[in-house]
Image (cartoon, rainbow, N blue to C red):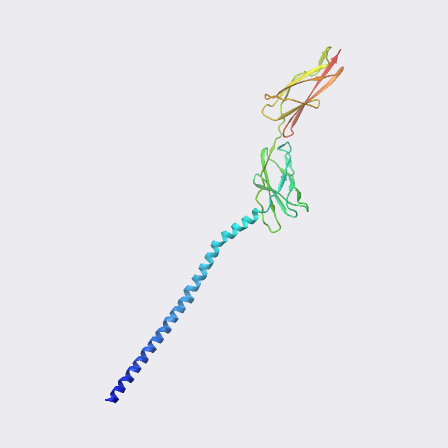
Length: 246
């Protein structure tokens, strides 16, 4: 009876040993499968997700770059007039020293200039279009960073001479006796800012473009010069000869 009991214990022991081996091999297989999944799928996808996150971060970096560029001061353009009769213009101004300034006309790049040690610059001659021209500039530093655009300056280019009609005196008019005076009357454009000078003296022009001025004359021949000049610098001149005889 004792021998039989010992035999049963040996059988159970071997059975448990076989189950342990099976569990061990199963564990090895599961670990191998998990390792394969980790190497073949999880790690590549994890790296890909990091790359995707970096892509989302790029616009933020770009925004930071824009903010930094906004701190770069744009150039100060010096154009001391609003209109010109010249078909070309030289743009002068100031910016940061030893930088580059780009000049734009109606949004199109026209000139690129290096600033001097004190920041001053003068552009190349820039061709203007008839009518209104919008001029602006940007500063570019040594790292290639660009500033915001300067405030645009509007320049009117006109090559049309103003109207100048003289009603009196007539040319070669003779004045006999009386005061040595003559009244000059005439008309110019009413829709433009026109200045009138008579023998170098500025004369008032009313809202209709009419003007009148009485001037002194001398014995004998007198030349009276009337000049009309618009805001762009276009001008026209008329001369009248008046002879005074006492």
